[in-house]
Every structure is written in structure tokens, then in C-alpha cells.
Length: 119
Image 1: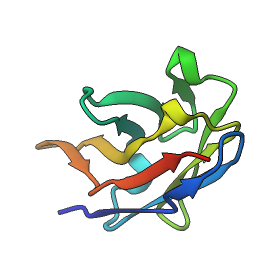
Image 2: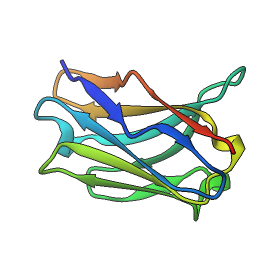
Image 3: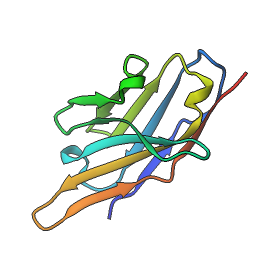
């Protein structure tokens, strides 16, 4: 069983920055692809970006250049650095872990952290 705990959300003014963290339990983290997703009120959950076990990243096209995902395998933690935030970035942000073992495909979600961009 893997637990993911997000932190770092909050209220920020337009143009500001936030860094979200997602700490994972267990020993699978270093072999997992970690993703960040978000869900705004009344909208479907959407992909923000992912980082593979090897550190390769990809992002939603609309967010490229403002958001950066990184990971620290020693700390079992993945980060989402968000810059130049806009009101439309307001959403609950979720961390996702995906990994394949010999016998199973793992897919875990965190509880989410609220990000509100408002003046």
C-alpha cells in the first residue's frame, strides 16, 4: 500500500508562485512515474504533467514554461513548482503514482491540496 500526501497549497495572488510537495510512503517511489493533476470546480480532472523514474518530464501544453515538476528519490518526494500563477490555475491539485510490479499495476492518488489564485 502506498500513501501520497500533498502539501504546499494555499492562497496566492496572481503572478505569484507556489511549490507543492507530494511525499510517498513505501519503497516503490524511485521506480514510479509521478504525475500532477488538477481539478477546478465544475471541470474534469486534467493532467498537469508527469515525471518518469528516470527524470523525464512532460507537461500539458498550456502550462509548459510556467510549471516545473521535479523529484527527490532520497526523500520519496515529488514537487510541482508553479510560477506566474493565474486565477484559472485555481483548482485542487492531486499527486499520482504509477508503477508496474511483476504481479500488479499500481495506481495511487493523494487526497489533493487546494490552490487558490486570487487578489
